[in-house]
Length: 405
Image (cartoon, rainbow, N blue to C red; front, top):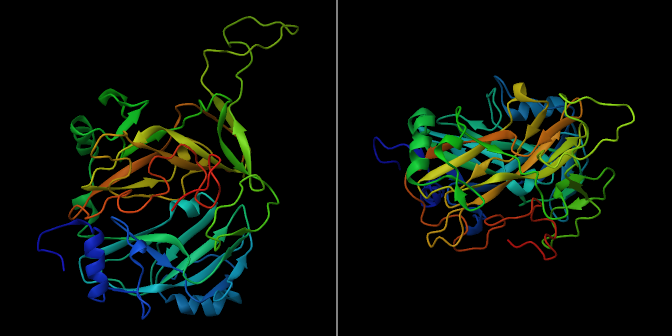
C-alpha cells in the first residue's frame, strides 16, 4: 500500500484505499464519503455504550475483559440512542476495526465539535498502556471512552465524536523540528495576526509552535463563553443547531483596575482602570471556557497538524481537548483570506487562574503528509470552522445564523 521508503500522514485517497484493502474494516454498511477528511477519518459509535465504574487502560489484556470486570450498565444506542450523564465514564465499541500492516501507526483525537461541548473522548485498544495511540501493526477493535463534563448529551449509533489518523513510518521521520517550522514560516507563513505574518522573531518554538490567547474581544468586550451549570440535555443526534443561551454564558474581558506596584497608594484613593494593560479574565476553577487564539493558522496542503494540551508546569489550566488540523485549514489558494483562528477549550483546575491577552497556552506540532490530499479542508463541502470568528461549535446557532456543515 505504501511505496517503499516513504513516510508521513496518509491523505484521504490512501484512507479510501485502506478501506478497500480491508486495513480499515468499516463493516457491511460501508462508510459515507463525508466521513473521510483530507488527513483523517471520522469513527462511528457502535450499538451499545457501557457505563463504567472507572476509566482504565487495557494493559496486558484485551478491552472486552476490562468491560466484563468494570461495566455496571449497558445502554442501547440504536433507535433514538441514549443519554450519557455528566462526569461518568462510558465505553462505546466503535464500528471500525483495524488490521494495520507493519509500518503503519495510528493516532486518534476528539473532533473539534466534540471538544467544544466539553465531551472528553479517547480511544482505547487491546493490550495498550496509552490512550489515543494505536500501535504500529495493531490488529483489533477500537473502543471510545466518552465522559460528558459540562452537559448531559444524547448520542446514538453512527454518531461521530472522534477522528483517526494513520501514518507510515516512525513519527520522528515525518515530524517537523523547530528549525523546520521556522524555515517553513519564512517561506510560507504559518501564523498571521491582524492579516500580517507573524515576524520570525515573534515565533515561540519549543517542540512545536506556540499559540496565544485573544482577550481583546469585540467592541463590547466579549471574548468567549463559559458553560452554564445545570444546563438542559444537549441532543447531539439532532442535525439542526440550537440556541446557545440555555447552555452558555458570555465571558467579557475584565477592566484592569488598581494602582501600579511601584506607585504610592492611599487607602482612600479609588482604583482606576489601567488603559495600557492588556485584556484579562480570571477563570473560575473547574469551569469550562471557549476562547479564541490571537493568531490565525495556515496548514499548507503538504502538512498535517495537531494541537497539544497545555503544559501543566506553566499554569493551573488545560487547553484544547480536540487536536487535529487537516491540510487546508486556514489556507486559500486565491489569497481571499489569510489563516483561520483556532478555538481553545480551557479549564482551570484547582484554583481560579488569571489569563491575559497574548498569553501562550498551547502549541501546534506538524507532520509531513505522505502525499498532498486530493481535497483540502474547506473544499468540496462546507466546513464548520474554516473562517471562524466565534468559538461556539456546530451544535449551536452562531452569530445569529445557524451553523453549517
